[in-house]
Length: 136
Image (tube, rainbow, N blue to C red):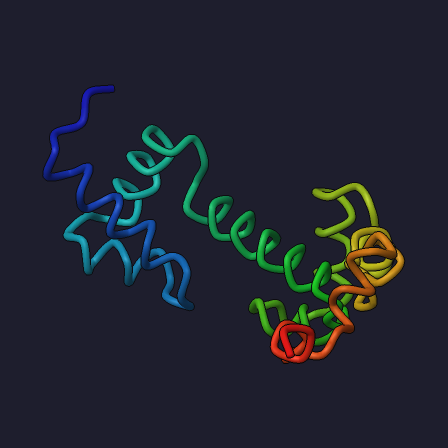
């Protein structure tokens, strides 16, 4: 399917609006298309329906927040889901693990000192004015 540049710009604009809470109908009106046109052309260009695109973007945000240590319930409501059960079921289907298990498996430890070689750790503990004190 060949799409003219003007239509492509409108589809890119619609994709950017999907990050908010606007409905597909209101986005379609804002970019000057019918909802059916928007869905068909969006799918042809981006390989997913607007709903699928929005869901994947929300799940990507959820993965990032869980990796940073956020609570599952907070993540669920922050990314726009109203049901913890439906969020957990969808997350599990798409990611392959429940949100709580995913969070534990990818969470970055806060204390990185075991990962720093001893000599670098010792250098980091030297006073800031060490060079000035040793020059005297």
